[in-house]
Amino acid sequence: MAGQGSTGNVIAALASFFIPGLGQLLQGRLILAGIQFVLAGVLWIFLLGWIIHLWSIVDAAVYKGS
Image 1 (cartoon, rainbow, N blue to C red):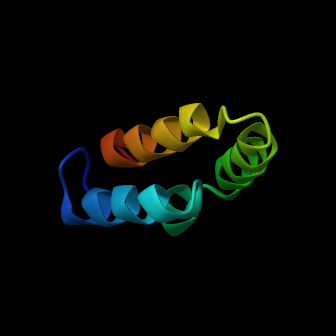
Image 2: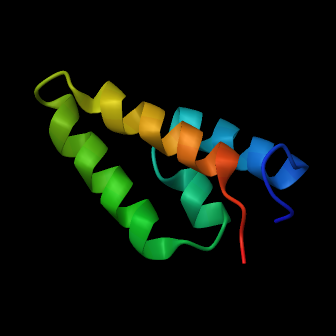
């Protein structure tokens, strides 16, 4: 992935919009993807999952890669 605003990051952000952590999974960040997916699932029980959901989208969009 090239960095913020790249096509890969836009696709990753869109994927995270639908499923939290999916964008990070597409970027190859498996641990963070799992953490965001589980946290969003747990917090949606208390109607606070939107916090993790937004974090997932923004994080995928601004990821710079290595």
